[in-house]
Image (cartoon, rainbow, N blue to C red; front, side):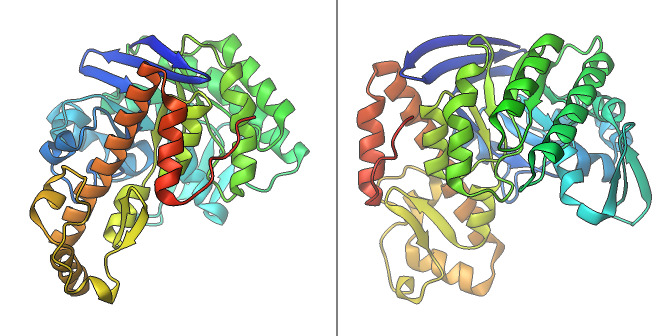
Length: 371
């Protein structure tokens, strides 16, 4: 993988990631394909939204169907028929999400499988091997996602463990030609975040991610971290904000120098009838859409908006038809990709401030200050 920085506008960056399997323009949003599928989407539909890279889930694919099944097809790209780049998370966040079902030691994590209850172990070496078997284009180190809230001692112990696991991940990655990203932890404590970043820089990674956000903290806490952390990261490496988020969060991350994002929000919200439009969120299951013949978003060029009325989408949602979730997902993912394309163009042209002003004006919201 190579990363080229093409333009800047304030802290915001316009770049390009190049892989053997394709090019990714940044800032980029990565749809989440947890089980080897972006829910409700054919691979060709994902391409049509404008997505150039997707995310796969190491933890879930390892448990089901297992890498032995996937390897018989070649790798994850061959298994799911997505030929663009794939980033796989390491499994650390999913282990964190298990709560009382898991036990963390220096060696790794022992937990009860959410699939069948069997006792399972995963450490940095196991995570690196699974991601190698999946054929990932970007491999994430195995880390512990620091919980929120966490006092400084708890966050420090967690961060130091993640640094030791980062070194083991780098060692186990070995001759794998895929990119390897480190993950900055440290909770909401600036001094710990800086120590984590320094430790990762010494180990050496192809890119760096900001972990431990979108774990229940209030938005102002997340913004506080983003106000200082991206600017401390090496300019020549891509910066990835994990698990975030809403369109407003993407805009604020880009304004502060983040290059890559992923989140289940556009796909999950689509299945719940919450659809993103320029003025905010439209709830398609509300009764007043029953007779609405207008398109979901008249400014959107997606297949859904070009072909179907709000009344039809409302009908599908009320009936629980799977086509409703599919059409909603097509729209939400396209909305996110159009947003990212607009941000890229604005940075390239040096007009990001005007773009941000218009973005918030359409939503009737004030523009948040930049620190």
